[in-house]
Amino acid sequence: MGMIRETTKKIVAGKTPGALLATLCMALLLTLLVPCAFAQDTLDLDKAVKVGSGKTMVIEFTDPDCPFCRKAEAYFAGKASQVTRYIFFIPLASHPASKGKIQYILSARDKARAYQEVLGNFDSKKLAEITPEGVKLQKEHQEIARLNKMTSTPTFMIYGRIIEGFDLKRLEPLVK
Image 1: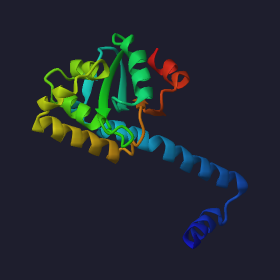
Image 2: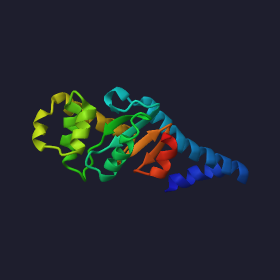
Image 3: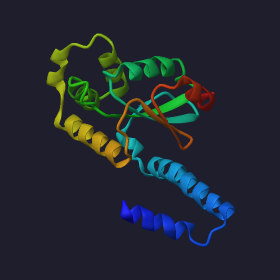
Image 4: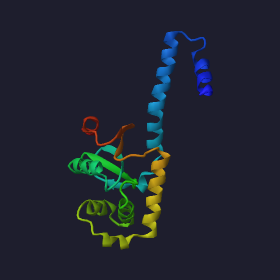
């Protein structure tokens, strides 16, 4: 706590209230914008599952067993010609069966189709089709999420903005 006080004193020292406000606003702006731009620019989209063919790029972090992710999937299903989604999977601890499902999706030749299959009536016997490559890619997705500080699903990156949760009011203007 002492270190925070000392740093605050250094920032405040010799600044007029207007200059101090400008400095704080710039720091807040950089804190909010820089991680978004950095994260999106460093993602390896070749590792993502690509769905759709539209001009608007949506980077999505999802869990196939998350109910809000499923709502987002239903929303985006009707926008495949408007939106191209790059989907990274994060198996949340609260959905223990999702890790196997994700590995199944990432093991499939047609990953987009396998994702739809998992969202429907998925037969758990198909988990036997998981490949070492699918397991490796699932771990890479988890690492990509960790490096980009993605801890909740669904999370979307659209035009450098991060939207956590299925927030239709924030999503709609960006995907039109």
